[in-house]
Length: 306
Image 1 (cartoon, rainbow, N blue to C red):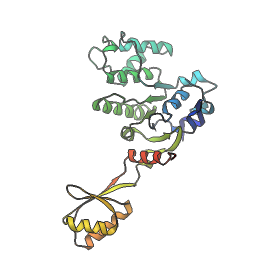
Image 2: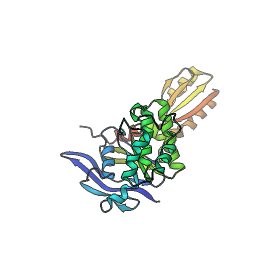
Image 3: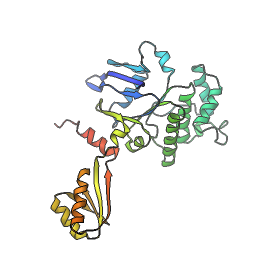
Image 4: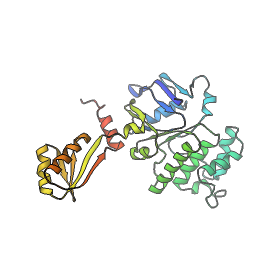
């Protein structure tokens, strides 16, 4: 597999505080990689090291197989990024702001129009005249991505791209990220603590906690058969309740039935017992754990109890 970003033994200390600890991640080329972690887990520090904004105390970083220390200017041309809130000159238009970036990368001005079209800003009424200071937050986020795309990077790094957006803006951002990956082949590295959002856009995820990589792999690896609970609806609620208790499972009553907290393989046992006791089953549904539940379980297991 080809990797767009690889880190080996990446470490960063601030005095006695270890922000990133021996971090090793592999970001497949052309995919959306969700970099998940609680606030303060080391996500932004990692991004700043990848971008060369801060120097690691140990380890190395490769971009498409090349170590970044030796050819910093060359590898930065492959990366577009938004770290925290995009900054623009509020008294200039979108085109005028992006023109500054185009000059910095010695990019033809035609790319500005293409980038604005890619993020869906070119169709906004009066976009060529409207000052960026009058933009909504969602428009500024789109403009930030357009700015990152002006020089045609192969990697796009987004740090908390949906922060502050309303539900409609989040949905639009989600569609844009998928479009950039699937239609344009850009590797998207999304740093976030919004687990459910990442679950809907990522192909691969890495979970970081206290500066360490806890788990990494395909999103399918995390969408496992690990069951959160079993939803059950029958025609004899009292008899069903007694049967569940006899099996020793924890359960909760709902408006129409029960939530049984058992493993997925035990669903067969529950069903057989119900049928064997002449209880008609209207609904038997396995509810899998969400990525959020998996994440909380994974990170909690790493906590040191004092």
